[in-house]
Amino acid sequence: MNVFIKNIKSFNHAVGYQDELPSQLDDYNWDLVDKVKRIYQDNPKMLKIKIDYLSERSIPDQIIQTSEQNSFIVLLSYLLMFVYVGIAIGYFPSFVHNRFLLGLSGIAVVIASLIISIGITLFIDIPLSMISAEVVPFLLLAIGVDNMFIIVWAEKEVSTQITSIEERVALALKEVGPSVFTAAFCESLAFFIGILTGVPALVSFCLVSGIGVLVDFLLQVTVFFNQLIDYICLS
Image (tube, rainbow, N blue to C red; front, side, top):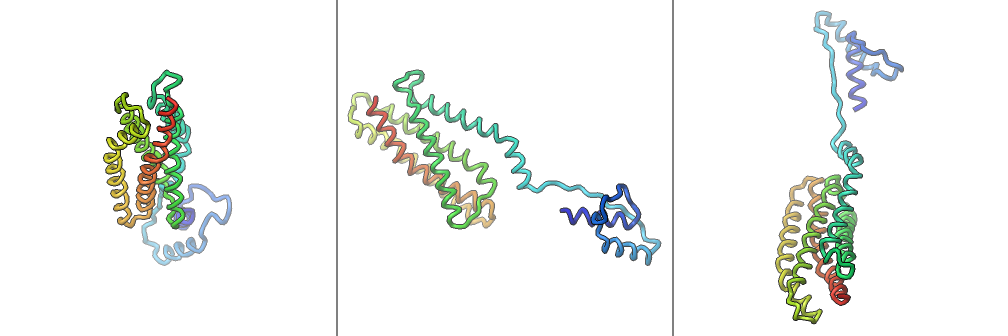
C-alpha cells in the first residue's frame, strides 16, 4: 500500500501537481518521476491528469480493530451468560439446590471443547482464522448451554418416586440422549461438509466448529452428567 501511494504521488509530482511538499527525498519514486517527465516532454500535447487515491485498511486489520474495541462488551456478555446459566439451571434462590456450580461446570465443558477443537486444528497445521476466533466461541456456548438445559430438564422431569440415582440418570439420558446426539451429529456433519469448499478461512471455521460440536457432545454426556450425578447425591 505504501509503494502504491508513493507511486501516485510521484506521478502527480512529475506532471506538475504538488499539493504538499515532501519532507524527504524518499517520499518520491524518482525513477518513475523521470519516466513520466520524459513521456510528457516527448508528447507536449498530452493531457495532464492528476491521480487521487483512497486507501482503506484490510479486512483482517479491521476485524482486529473492531475486536479490540468490543472486547469489553464480549467479556461482559460471557460473564452475564455464566451468571444466567448458574442461576437458571437450578432452584434459585435456594442455597442448597441452586446448582450454581453445576452451571459453571457446564460452562467449563464448553470452554474445554473450544480449546480441544482449536488445539486439534492447529495440530494438523491449519491456521486459525479470525472468523473462527470470533464466532466459534459463541456458537459452542449457545449449543452447550442449550444441551445443559435439556439434560437438567430431563432429570427434573423424572418421577420423584424413583430414588435410584443410576435409574434417574438413565431415564433422563434415554429421554434426551437421541435428540442431543442427532442434533450434534447433523451440526458437525454440516460443518465438515463445509470443509470441501476449499476457501481457507471457511475451512478453518468449519473444522473448528465441527470438532467443537462433537467434543462438546461427548463432554456433555460424560463429564457434565457425572457432575449432575454428584449434585443429585448431594440433594
